[in-house]
Length: 325
Ligand code: BYC
Picture 1 (cartoon, rainbow, N blue to C red):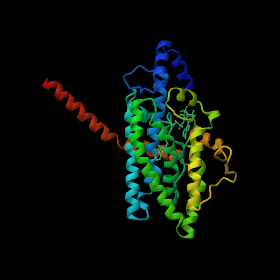
Picture 2 (picture 1 turned 90 degrees about the horizontal axis):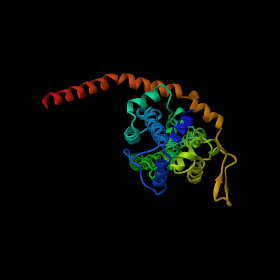
Picture 3 (picture 1 turned 90 degrees about the vertical axis):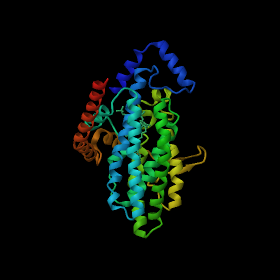
Picture 4 (picture 1 turned 45 degrees about the vertical axis):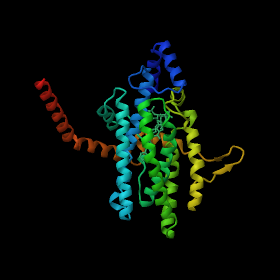
């Protein structure tokens, strides 16, 4: 329905303006907040940037959960820094969304009441320390695969936010790989934990790229507008090709009996995730959806007095300024 709404609004735009806008996109120009843009472009960006921002914020929950239980002081400091980075990424992205005429409060409320999504991956639990390594390795690895091309996305504020985010994400992926490597090279019990984490997180990581191209509602229009630079399946394949040799190096087995190198295609053949599980998770029925939204709602309610205090202070300051003029 949202897609339909975007389509009907897009067709109400002036055809000449639309053609000039598309020519700018095709020429590789960046679109800036004050430039004319089709309503569908604006709404698609708010949806994608907003979902992305929410993912960064909700993504702090499964990892933040392990800060107090990290096995060494060094791992604790690294994890703490990473989780703080995710908050920063959320803030850059909320700022980018705000340049499109929507307030951070509005999109936050849409997350809290379930009107807006966040990445499916964060609806899976992190059961032990190996999962934290696997999240850094696989989840941040998938995020980078998706986000590096987004540095070239057509909307200026989004593109600039992505450049900064990608620098930090590559550190995140490397710290995850290092943590899982330590487990994989450890005692038989630690290696078993690393394998178990890979078994549980492999398919949810593949789901992060979105449904297969034939079921992707937004890809065609988003790619024409260079909001997305690649299809979901293209990025998923790149992720598989990059990650399988890493798993082999670690001595771990990717839990896909059909995984094999295809010499002719120059890529790995792999099995798709269970798409019915994916659609169920994004409808709100994943293992942790209820907990994640409850945690975000509680944080929002608990922070009300801070927001009220800041607003009251800002109003008082503005009134003083008016009185002095
Ligand atoms: N989870 O037409 P499609 C991170 C929805 S990493 C939930 O292909 P689109 C982090 C989609 O919204 C993750 N929903 O959509 C990492 C649409 O539903 P609506 C954040 C999903 O937008 C480590 C429907 O399915 N990264 O932040 O063209 C630590 C049809 O899909 C998912 C980004 O958000 C999913 N996985 O393509 C901390 C990157 N996949 O909206 C944090 C930017 C699809 O019509 N986003 N859906 O109701 C994108 O590149 C694109 O939005 C996607 C989906 C590839 C994710």
